[in-house]
Structure formats: C-alpha cells, structure tokens
Length: 63
Image 1: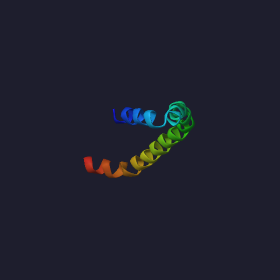
Image 2 (image 1 turned 90 degrees about the vertical axis):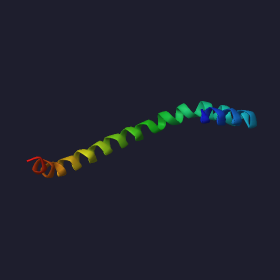
Image 3 (image 1 turned 135 degrees about the horizontal axis):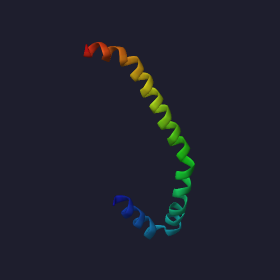
Image 4 (image 1 turned 180 degrees about the vertical axis):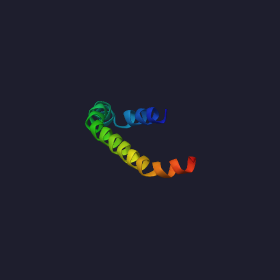
C-alpha cells in the first residue's frame, strides 16, 4: 500500500519519472532474475555442505 501511495505521489510531482519507473521496473526485474537464481543455488549449496558437516554430530546426539 505504501508503494502505491509513493508511486501516486511521484506521479503527481514528476509524471515522466513515474512513467519511466513503471516501464523500467519489469525490465530491471528480468535482468536481475538470473542473479537471484544464482543466489538461491549458492545458498542451497552452502546449506547442503553445512548439513553434511553437521550430520555426524546430529547422528551421535540422537543415539
């Protein structure tokens, strides 16, 4: 809701900038999408490595 109000305020104050932001936002989102996917893969890999290192300790704790 806050983003909509800020956009409406920007539309009133400077409508060309608001329209440029409206059209450029999906383009920038598409450009940044691969970096988000790489971040998810790297984060998942680090979580897998951490789980493998802590597996013996968790296995001994359950015994």
